[in-house]
Image (cartoon, rainbow, N blue to C red; front, side):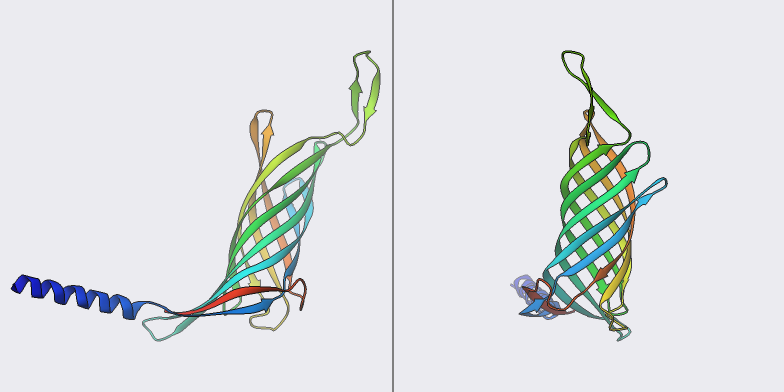
Length: 218
């Protein structure tokens, strides 16, 4: 009987601690503008450009109270993205690809941000130089816009700074490292590392969407 009482006291105490330690959430719906992005992409001997749009999905504002009493504020944003990219590889090909992605961005109140963004898409290459085609009658002709189509998967992560947090300027700068995978490429997967340096512009009321926002205190 005594053991049962001790057990019940332990369970009640544990549940109470869990309940009081849970974060306090408030949820609301707000209208948020979409973002526009432009960037340089490339590495070593090849370079290119990239244009995109970020459609907001949701935002979580988080406040954490540290043991020192200092409050740590940051926001977690989620976006659906659409991007058009191009790069030129001398003496090999030009690659143009359209991709859709999911961006997970974390921004501190100081403006420092980190993000991770997987993407999927379709790539088409245009071979460098002149490509000739020979038919069954051995007639030779020039093939215009010769190239190939590939399925594409991209994974990238990086850091940046959001000037709207401290300077009230509607833009962010960022740097990312991406790994591009195209397939099937001669029955294998073609890997291409890409460095991306760019700018995100935050216009007012551009493709505005109603999104669910949440404030969380821990």
